[in-house]
Image (cartoon, rainbow, N blue to C red; front, top):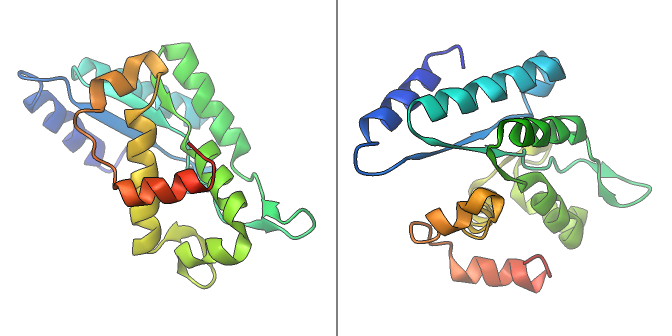
Length: 179
């Protein structure tokens, strides 16, 4: 937010809002978890949503992609972002901003395929946070589908004509009983 990139996003949105209302997805958590308090995180999300609205754009708050850290006892993903996910939900509700719960869906998928298969998406063998190209493609399509089918303030109704998730990847996700 303080590096100037956010200003670039707002300027681009404002420059393109004469013919349509741009959508801006806002997602944080992994790195903010290390440097910010929950209250600072919530303040930043609320400010960014307000900034997007002021630029005549539609803010969409997105909960963070799950990390692929495993609880060996339960053989399931550790919910190490739950406080940040809850904070994102709170800000969305308090500010009447659209919300896409990417964390819940990505966690459901990762738990369904198991630890060994989830490792296929790691950027490196020891990096269970960042994605490789295969992971970027799969989770990008998951996100597109979540936005296109969202009922949060009629989000899907306004975006489904512009999003075209890969049907083969969506079939793979559906086969895991996610959608």
